[in-house]
Length: 373
Image (cartoon, rainbow, N blue to C red):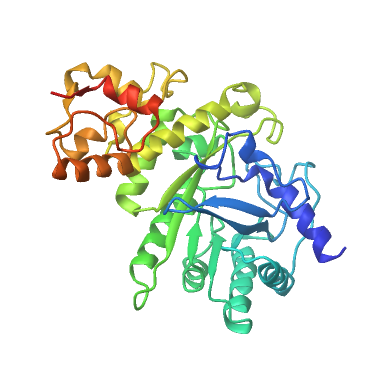
């Protein structure tokens, strides 16, 4: 089997592990791969609003794990199994990077033998790229749950970013998906360890840290996910938390995602991303985000609009005097628009939203929550 065939197999096997952030198309579109067969070239959104391409692949689709949601688990026969050698992957990436300038490389893996053995292989890819081939660009390594502190520290010294999927919001939910994984020890403690390592890197070097929930595999609620997300931002200062809707048919029969499938799971994922933006960019606290009686975000309206409609006492806001944090609560106004509004307000006496370069739909929506006197 040549390297290209392995890459195709590993790209197919890695389709379940998607961080489908808002801003890169509809939930359905974000799950389609390139028709030319380059499924390993993965679009990402950048903090500055731009986008780019990373080469994203598994190092191996072999796995000894028992995660009930994952098609790579040892007792499943859903994916073809193969493994790329460390130097084989390094050279593949460099060749793609030569032909088409990429943002970088993102490598994850099934668990080969045990977590530390797998981390050693992942770290070897990074060592070869950094020290043998002189690559200085973006390199993201997925940390394997249960890896030792020493293995994680070595990865932190090599990578631009590390991520460890939190998967579920609590130990109880994790126990319903895996009998081998200790959520507190293997996941939450290691996420905190990565933060500690990032805070103590030499010089001015920065290590990004992210995590990801598998939404709908366990019987978790959105409220539980949002509360845990807020904790990750507050205590571990993660750069991003991602949400990946569980894909029915990939998990073990009997887990909640299979026993009680959710036909609206992609919409649920989308609402969680909208709520996440409110946490990261709009100054909301998790407890403020409105969930329905079943603990889910409303499928009928985005969470910011839902909050506004539940707090009529907050509105209307006076356009000419409202503070930034207050304006960020107005449906239809985002951080960029609010900053434009504040800048314009310093120059003139605003009486409408004209000149702020927002569409008529958003302008009309926002106007219903504002006082223009």
